[in-house]
Length: 473
Image (cartoon, rainbow, N blue to C red; front, side, top):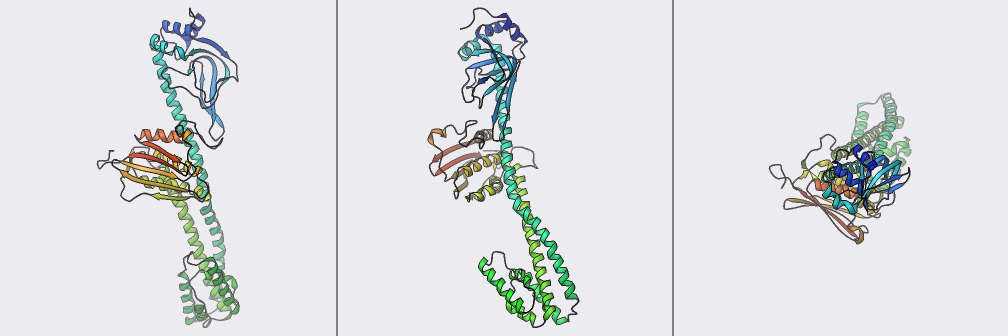
């Protein structure tokens, strides 16, 4: 029940309040009559996370903070102090904090029950206007914080994926470089031995012919493991029979060289000279193979870095432009490659040639794909399937992200786009991914739809396409 008379102690505090101090005296009087002055001790919970607010808090003194753990430890989302207004406000859809709002410094607040809001908007138009501005500022702040936190979580996922993706080729480069030095030293020793053998023209020609033949290496996957092992054993036997170093068998087995060609060489070059010649040839093969391995690994690193640049648009300012949706999806899937391999998930990407570009901000659309793909991979069991399809329907591109996981229960399908709602375990999901997806797509004047049954979940995204004049349909 409102007080019959305004408390002039409250009136003086309202007059000094940063947000509401400039309001008319009559509106201060209304607030003083209809509010309840309360004091809260440090550590008290003002509002429980997940519960709808029913009171507006005009903060005179103290500090209240809302914190949340979004997978990287608890951190502050927002705080309010003297001169702020928190809690429920007129025209808000209903404030529901994602976690507890806790008093961190003894606070004194004037509490206004929502039952008085209709009268407040009628009797206090200036206060109402100030509260609407505060509500809009709070909405912008929470949106900014949510986007920042989701970007940080996405960055963490991206960094973890990159660490895995880059580890193998980087290790291959390091291993190859270390081995290359030894192989080159062996080639140098063999070359000196061969140079001291005083070979005639026929012997030099025979050795050069075999060396050139070994340059025509068989593709790495051309032979099965058993076939290659048998071939290495056969060459090792030949080398032993001819008094040559059996260590040459491994490199020579990876070439197209036949035993008949080795026999032809042995007919011209004999004894220690044959051993020196084969050591020189096999060392050259080993050096070329290591160089090819380093080149392949370095190319993989370059491709991954290219995918990161394409995914983040790091060399382009955020701007609305023509976006190649297929390229963005390929870059995103490249960054998630370790996760798909770890769970043996089969990925199918169907992007027909000749599709028009989408109208939007490339980095933001890639964030949409990252969230949708990553959620699908999390939902899938080992050996599952992820299907990504793009097609044109009139002036829209329709992107479908489908998985054959367990599906989303019907009773929660209406909540999955709500901020902070997650089906993942504590610390494993922020509850922001799909909310961010929804917001980013709204910014692009796009839509997202869900269809889910056990064994089939499909998210469909409708994007505007670029018209011939560079705009959107």
